[in-house]
Amino acid sequence: MFIHYKEIWKQKLASAVNALLEENGVTETIAASDIIAEIPPQSNMGDLGFPMFTYVKLLHKNPPQIAQAVLAKLDTGSSVAKVLGPYVNIFLDRAEIAGELLKEAALGKQGSLGRPDTLKGKRIMVEFSSPNTNKPLHLGHLRNDILGESISRILAACGAEVRKVCIINDRGVHICKSMLAYRLYGEGKSPESECIKSDHFVGQWYVQFNRISKEDPGIEEKAQEMLRKWEAGDEDITALWKKMNEWAINGIKETYKRTGISFDTYYFESKTYLLGKNEILKGLENGIFYRGADGAVMIDLSAEGLDNKVLLRKDGTSIYITQDIGTAIFRYEDWAFDRLVYVVGSEQQYHFKVLFSILIKLGYIWAKNLYHLSYGMVNLPEGKMKSREGTVVDADDLLNDLKELALQEIKEKEREEAVGNPEAIAEKVALGALHYYLLQVSAPKDMLFNPKESLSFNGNTGPYLQYMGARISSMLRKAPMPTATSTVQPELLSGDAEWDVIKILFDYNNTIAESAEKMDSSIMAAYLYSLSKAFSRFYHDSPILHAEHPDLTAARLALSEAVLFVLKDALYLVGIPFLEVM
Ligand code: ARG
Image (cartoon, rainbow, N blue to C red; front, side, top):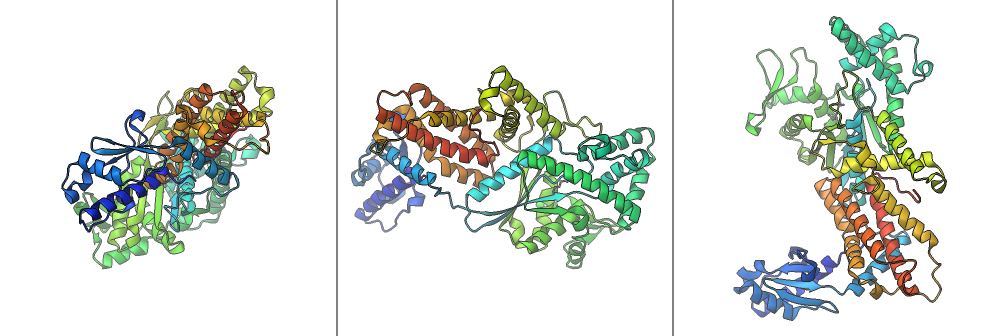
């Protein structure tokens, strides 16, 4: 939506520059896309600034002289252009731009929402969450989940065909640990009998295992033995494994549903863990890999600034990276992607560097398009989370706590009646608070999640954005019906507060495209905040329903509608539920 006026002015500038070049006998021409448009540092310097430095070489004049000459050739229409030192600055005709905005917003309302098409026709696979089936999701997963879900929505908004995938880590010794503890102490019990969410039930046995192993280190070997039996297809073990995995996965999926996360494809490590071995053996034959002194297959990545890395153990068993090599190839064969994004914690940065360089060495050209969307740790202010001791910040518990806090707030404000269903609203406020807080920090940074702060209604928070949406919605509900004769007059929207809002609305598509290009949802989050703040200023300064004149009311309502439209759309891109009332 909203073809940016910047693009239109780049065209105009290109025409003026080219006319000037031609006049000076220069055969070279400038494309509109090469024109640099800046936002002047102060609003009294205009809305757009075009630097002239680049043309010095071509015209052999100084930038201010060039600026004067370009100005003379520029078709400014009803806007005003001025030379400011080495720049040509534009003071836009606000009424004209406001008119454009309202026209497009009206189109958008009819469902023809224009989107950036920067990724049109591209296939992008996004892998995220990727939990293990020995325990429920924790706070780190919540960050991972919303990063993956949000970036997928943003990429799709740019026209990409996105496939969201999740690889469930359902095998290995850690899975056997919860199985073993259950078998020793829990046989006969079930999530139903204990009235506990099924993934939490499984997680308790994992915690139990670690408790036992402190007193009885021998139990570790028993878990290894169980893994060997599982690999050999032992019937009893397989049955237990199936049962416990189902519990874990069903519980985990409930949490996804609650948080609005979904996947197109689930992969299961138990089905993919043998992939990759053949690739390693082929690479060994081709001399890409070598056999180490102890018989393990290795790769020397010192030329890439990485180490020597084992790819197959001496007993021929594969390791984490072997599987990832196989899985990537398998995925590409299944669905030839233009890009594969892995949303995985920053502690695995080295792993992904190695993975990507190995695939390139194996000759897979597409491996150049693999991307690790790395994110930092999340902790609560109280302290570190560790899953072994069972002091991990559990995702469901945290969601419940947030919901409880939000509910309290609704009660304190005596909004129970007004919101209709306080429970449902509290749940959505909790999600809004969580997702915004997690996304607003750029992914690579470690962060603290502060539940109280995340829920504050007046700060840089999710609920603040939701509140803004509810406020506009409520105003529009109270608005007079437009009369047949009333047409909106965009020239009534040229005050400074309105103008700020309009400029931000025009930046919407560019912001989506930029977030996609930089793989950074925090850009979208920041956009939402600046839009809400600008609207709030406008709302504060300019009476809308009680404006001096009905025409003014009509114009301001039309602008508010456009804001609501963009706000809703942008909230969706960052996984914050929109609320009509709160
Ligand atoms: N389940 C793994 C873990 O908990 C993360 C998997 C990441 N994805 C991958 N393709 N390696 O560490």
